[in-house]
Length: 239
Image 1 (cartoon, rainbow, N blue to C red):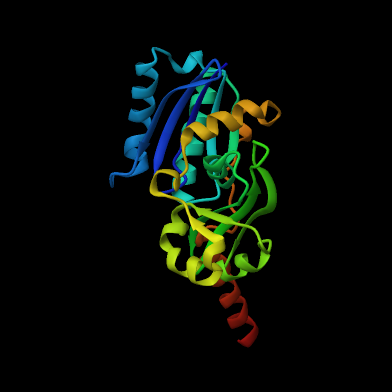
Image 2: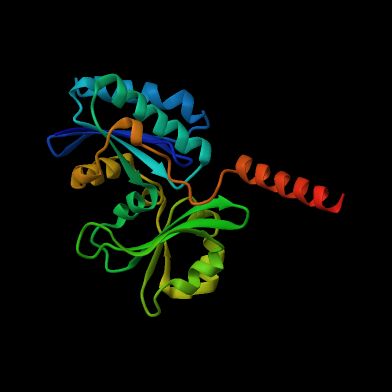
């Protein structure tokens, strides 16, 4: 089984190739260029390095969110295009679940958190002690302090993701010795984790036309449109 995974959902863009159950190439990029500039050259480099083509892939995996609205769209559109061009299926991978794979087999509660802006984080909680991530909390968008209240008492908590770096001091002050901030090499999402999750969940493979981004709240443009409509409605009523 050959899988190509693409992730542009956060500050690190990446791609990975799995061949016959092994990760044979993985690329991670965080050097200031936009994901739309870097991801397809990275895909070409990865495939060239292992002497495979897109037509050799059995499935294309996209980290479909939650994450940056623009970033998620870039990766999802890239995978939809590859799936359409080759007639192969694709698979949506949850960003927070893929992050939890960084601590496969840990006895701690794995708490991936991503910066959602507006004072919120995208968050979830997983138990990875038996291997593959098992959900303890569903994906959500909320204030970090509200997320703290939902976590189990008396358990060690490992925080990772870009919001873990952003809010490290707040996390440690609030939770004390129970909280661990993941080290830099394990803090960001790895595209090879998306390969593994796609391989384990063939029931999630689907036609490229059905692949959709995962948004936990409406994009800013949509929120602004709703706000304007509400204001116009109030003005009409008051008029």
